[in-house]
Image (cartoon, rainbow, N blue to C red; front, side, top):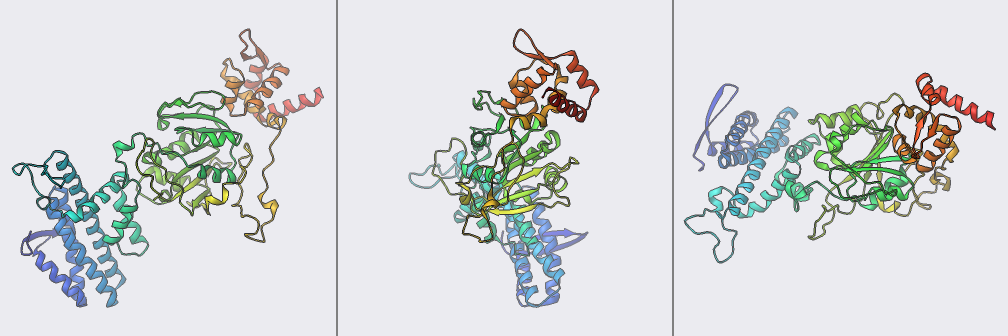
Length: 525
């Protein structure tokens, strides 16, 4: 399309018949600092950008690219000139918004062209270069005919791959730049695309079931700072990168995954198989610790909070999870049910390569954080008003720290090593004391009695999974309930509630059960 090609555009019912050459004159006026011309430039650019968007929607990618590229250049010039002549903030912001909108359209044009080139090369319609020629002359066409220069193709593919990994990548980047008062420039977008997750690796098909194993460094940091309930649910267990460190720290684990990988916990219990997004809460009261598939992270976190209502939940997520406003699930988990704490890794974690990757091992290009949700006494989450405590941590400092004791559900402030800060004393880094079995039985007896309403044969393993306690506590609870005549053992070795046990569950509340239990213990003594 030459500079004298006429383009008819309209906006607000007003038609404008112009040329690219005329648009370039607008840029000259802008550079000359002519304020009336600047105001007209910005008003005209609104219509130009809308015309470019219409062309893209209609599939005319080449013309949309050329028009949006010129609009970007002229909006950039207008914004710069408006700042130099100290024009109104409103005029500057409008020019930057036009620049941002033009950049979004231009970017989507490059994404479409990268797809078109790759598809044509796969069909043998465009040569991949080199000798001998890979495409017969009569069957082929050139990159110039597609509308993209060879030197632009690499950047276009990087941008396309970033959009594949995160469909809202361009919008999120441009809007973030605008909100921070920064110019939405091509150079910044190109750099961001080069560093985006997945730009040098996997397409959606290649990512498969999104298995990226959690680095041990992340787990050591989490366990040094957070304690969870004794029984923890890991619903995306993968190959056990989160499971094993939790078990080593003393947690009882219930595990599942979308894919059956034959993973078992330390008791030999096999993983469940199913889509967590379709799961329902069973047993209740379990904490959740996992690294969810990033492709469904919004829905995953929202489902966990809505359906499972964990007492505590830790998700390893991209730091950008704190941003975003269009996704309803993201709004729910960050605004209506916000986390209590977010541990931001100041040093990027080692790269999480997808399962089966046998290529070069790259360094990490993603900022991550542990997001911690805690349920309040009123069943709400967070501190209110979409607020949470953001804590910067360096994972290298926690690789030799002991995990907090399980079963407490507590957390500790980030630990500084002695000598780093003279105000920090040794007792500031103490380990939470572990509760005895008798103390745990006193705490859990009411839930165990209420659980008898299920009227199902059980052993210590079934009870342990049902109410979320360790095996030694489950055995002690069975002994206590049997001694009080609440359960009896059948010939098959399984336990069932007695008439007295059924009567108690039907007539007493949890507080009365605990009082009766403790009174019975005192009388026996």
